[in-house]
Length: 101
Image 1 (spheres, rainbow, N blue to C red):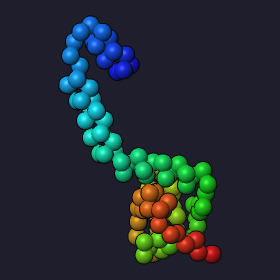
Image 2 (cartoon, helix red, strand yellow; image 1 turned 90 degrees about the vertical axis):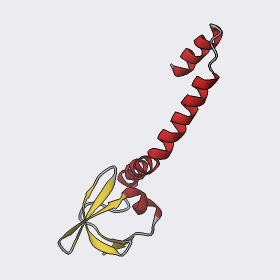
Image 3 (tube, rainbow, N blue to C red; image 1 turned 135 degrees about the vertical axis):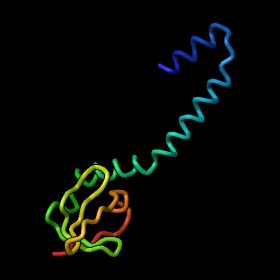
């Protein structure tokens, strides 16, 4: 839709170079700002799809050890000796996770 709008403006003879540059910078800024959120969402989807561990599993990661209480798209919640620990899914996907038996 934006591409079509820019094309129409260019066809009408309107200088669109500033508009195109602004759209590019806006896209870059949004991508940079949402990088961690998007990474967590994609990692969460992969964790839910491949299920390397599930609710009730005891895992160890980043110095934390606990029972998985819930797995969300953004983070996984551990119960670590009564403490609630939220681990970003991007960390669970990129760092070593030990599933304890």
